[in-house]
Amino acid sequence: MLSNNKKLILVIGTTDQVFDVGSIECPGPEPLNATIHSMRNEIMKTLLTVFKTNDSFTSMMARLTLGLVMFLHGAQKVLGWFGGYGFSATMNFFTGQLHIPALLAFIAIVAEFLGSIGLIAGFLSRVSAFGIAIVMLVAAFMVHAPNGFFMNWAGNQKGEGFEYHLLAIGLALVVIISGAGKWSIDRLLTGRLEGHRVTTN
Image (cartoon, rainbow, N blue to C red; front, side, top):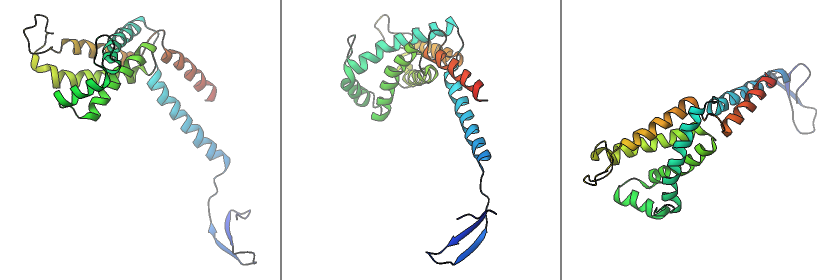
């Protein structure tokens, strides 16, 4: 138990033997509340960094363009829509033909599909754009770079070039730097977080 003078008193059983084991500091409510308040502010700053965006049409157009294009490709890989092969066949192609480790193949497919949905909705847009940018960068270097810059328009190359991937990375960078822009969940959350930050400071 603690005595009034902030000394730790040890009581043995139900006897009257009492041992003073020295003084200790007992944190009061003020330091504890200050610590909680500081932690809350740090969390709010982190959330604002992730969600914060301007109200720009440019960011919105970059986000929606990238999101719609990636959704079509992601739906091919995951759902088998739009002439795609679906998840199992895509995984087998990535791991068997391209020799990509299964975990990395899974992450790439999920990042492309879920990232596109995040971009269209404007939710966690920076995270979604970053994931897609990494997928495009890896695909450009590992798969498409040997085929040159241009897409296989004439059908005389062994595969597609990496010009498409550069365009996707460029759009992703716009979103990463500027945020989701207009008509996004991120924009809505930013307003609420900033308002909550003002009322709690």
